Length: 105
Image 1 (tube, helix red, strand yellow):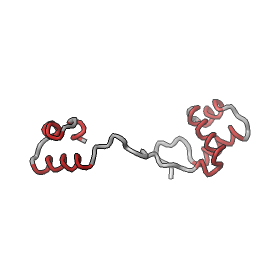
Image 2 (cartoon, rainbow, N blue to C red):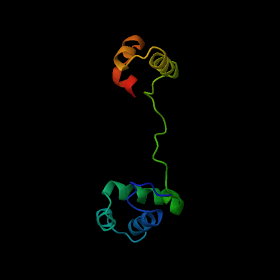
Image 3 (cartoon, rainbow, N blue to C red):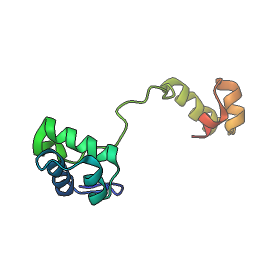
Image 4 (cartoon, rainbow, N blue to C red):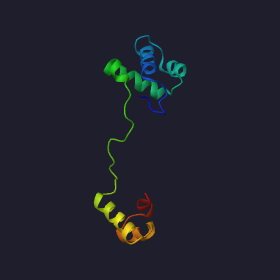
């Protein structure tokens, strides 16, 4: 399934990669023809060289990790203060020791 921001389908990516890898098109020409950026065309061509047709499959765009995620105990304390004491982001931030923008999320 193609996500809404994907410039081409799996078939379109495969056609672009084959034009570059097998037919010898310059990356700039292929990128212009398929209306994608040169870095994107290069990425797909490299993926095709490494994995073949299977490399053109759709990939998830979700982050693999969140190194700056708020720790679970802090989140539980924020939720507790919000529900039990009816405090807003600024009041909770002062008690928990994090930014009000973090609490607001």
